[in-house]
Image (cartoon, rainbow, N blue to C red; front, top):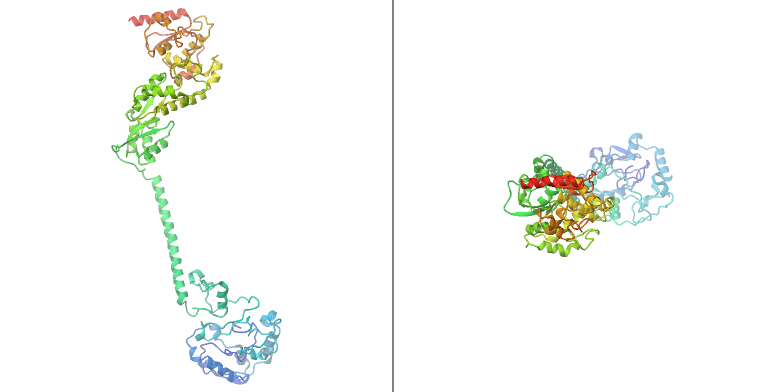
Length: 594
């Protein structure tokens, strides 16, 4: 049976059902009167059969008046509803009278429960006077339960002209109704079209329960030939939205692939963005920190607007044979320079706003250089050093006696430092002290002082300053260091603890290479004069460099006590005793006279 029947059995429909014997809403008129049932001829002058078997022709006449046949020809229904009812099939197959076994069999199926045995057996059927179908209970099986007039029953089908009209109110079921099976004539989303693209939003604007109730009462809006009204607009809107989403997704994907492809090409194959020429007349000051690599330098230049990109400078530095010789310091550069021009200018000393502390330089010389670089008046940096030296980060073992002339002597480590107008002297001095302190910590001067029998790390630094001042070459430094250590031994048979270095007297006079007699030197009793005072001076007499420091910590062991610059300039010769020293001294005097 179809959804208009009462169950899956073979029981024919009730004779009073308006659709009893209906062969379809558009049954061909040529079939009228060609079949019979129960010995009575059946004819269909329009669409309804003349069911005389039960003598209920008058009731069907009312149905014909209620549903005029001229309203039906324009409706289209699935083919399965245009087939003949089962009682016509029986009449055609068995002649004038359908076998009683089929009738009994169908009634028995309903009596035994049929398609709804579980429910019909428990719920008695109560006739409803308002229900025209409730009067015919006996024809459906006597006193058996029937849901046809209850809220659990499927509603009777309506003529096509009345489909879509507001349904009559139904009483609320006592329990949840059985889910409605999907019929073949309902072309819903599960018939091959997804609900999203089908635009099916029948229940979008109403609660789920109400939407399901409307569906269960046969209210299938717009299902008879296509969507219409609100649903039709919704379908078009959703289809358009779906297409728009697809277009946006595909377009975004294509754009993303194109962008990353372009970036990949630019990074791997395209030349780096770069300016051309030597730049503009506008200049900037760029400070390059110590140990900076090409990328660090390039980032500083890019930040100040000197070069257009990091890669442009790095590539130019790699192409220049001397590119890696760019040192730390302050540079005055033009804005908008090509990478190649920037590298070339940074290799030119004229572009550097730096100052170099040379190995062996005294502090008074460093102070004067800072004043000049910063455009300050003479003596400005020396006053800052004397006033603020305690705030520059000196190690604890520095300035360990009151006879030291300058607490910062030996702590302005020889190297290159940035020094440009606008900078403060205190900042530059502090950086120098910080560099020296870090260097001395790596050398572990405290341990080295004990090794060589010295009183403190400051004395190690003082020895290094003497080696730096007296030596001329790297080979001289190690021999010079041995001379110092040998003479510091108060029991040595050569000098008995006197160093007798001209460099210490020069430091006292703040001069260099002075020509003075021994008698004049011996008259000066300054603590720094090693001719009149045994042992080391109170503190360093300059700022030793790396070579002198390493030589001080690794002296020779050949027995050297004396040395003389025999040519008066760069050639230094060493002696182990006083006789050898006297011959070297005579050689020096001879060269001086010539």
